[in-house]
Every structure is written in structure tokens, then in C-alpha cells.
Length: 191
Image (cartoon, rainbow, N blue to C red; front, side):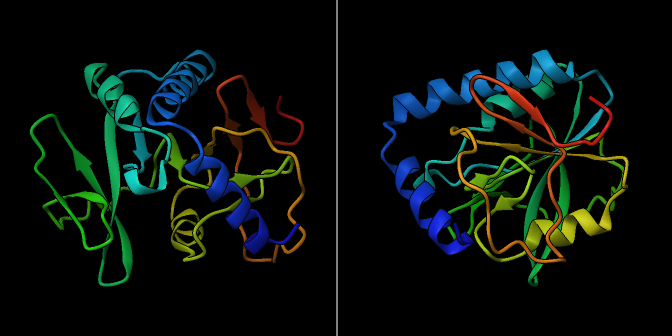
């Protein structure tokens, strides 16, 4: 299927989930992540903050877990059409952007490029690790700017079913996909 078709299909599937279902599934995704990756104190994780109106994975559960376990947390913020990474702490102040996204009040870019993991938002991911996001390219640009050692992880309520037909050469695939029931690896020869 084409990205535009998949974007529409999975946005509708996501919206059909009740808030209770989305919360429960988000918790199961967090459990899969912890079991598989065993995050450790001192690691650096870049993670998105959910857009509630899009019924995204509730990554606030992840953020609370990470901060409680002394894992350094970085979140994205769009400033002047660029995605920057801001380190957050228990007392970080947030505000809602014009897009309805909770973001840190600060515009201070951490400058961090060597994350252990980047947990990325998506609408769909196929069985080759190709992702369909919202079509703005922010995460493709982020992936190009960070360490090649960083593990790129997608999180989704749904398993991959269709292949993406219109993948193009600048698309950067994920290393892993975490769903409520499994972790899929797209790394060749390492798993």
C-alpha cells in the first residue's frame, strides 16, 4: 500500500481505540520494551511526547519509568522548523504548542547526538522496518544527525500487515518495532 493510504487507515484504527484500550496497550508496549531492552541507569533515551488528539502511544508511562530509574530522557521540540532535543527532569516545565503537543518551555537544545535509543512516533511500520509517520520528515532528519550506534525504535498498537510500496531512498528504516505482544528486529544478522 502507499504511505498516504496506510496513514489514513492506521489513523482511523488508532482513533477507534478507547482511551482505556490505548492506555492498557501503551502499558503492554512499555513492558515489552523493558523486557527486551533492559534499559539501565545512565542511558540516554530520546522519546516523543504523545499527541493526545491522535491517540498516540502514551509515552508518559515510559518517561516516568525512565526518570524513576535514573535514565536520562530527551524529548523533541520543533523550533524554527527544526527538531531539537531537550533533556527533561522531574521538575521540567511544559506548555502546549500550537499543534496541541506538550513541549518543554525551554528552547535549549541539549546538543546530544549519541543516544542509546530513539523511540519514534509512527502511524505504521512494515516488516522491513519502513515507517509511515506524519509526513513532515522530522525523524528522518533526526536519524541522519545522530550516532549510527543509536537504536531506532518504533512503537505501535498494531502489528505490521502490509508492505509500504512507496519507500524512497532517503527514508531511514527502524531497527526495532515494539508492539503490545512482541519486539520485531530489523537488524540483519544480529538477532
